[in-house]
Image (tube, rainbow, N blue to C red; front, side, top):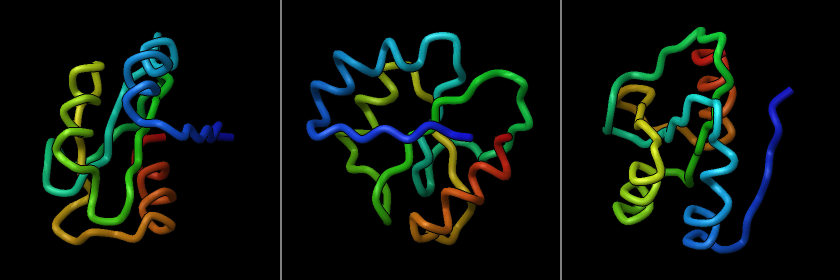
Length: 93
């Protein structure tokens, strides 16, 4: 089962917590219209960042990329978060 964690403040999370969370994993940020189409079936652990509907703001995407994340998307249509999660998990696992 995936592990879900919530953090209240973005910048301290990305700078202080995130580097430890993504160790030994493939770090992916799901963001509409950027990166490659999400595909996977990897045997490696995956750390997946999913934002609000419509995606993260540019500042957040840049901070994730600076932390070592690669971007992916699910195609032209933007899905609601509750639909994007199972689709991403199905494609990546």
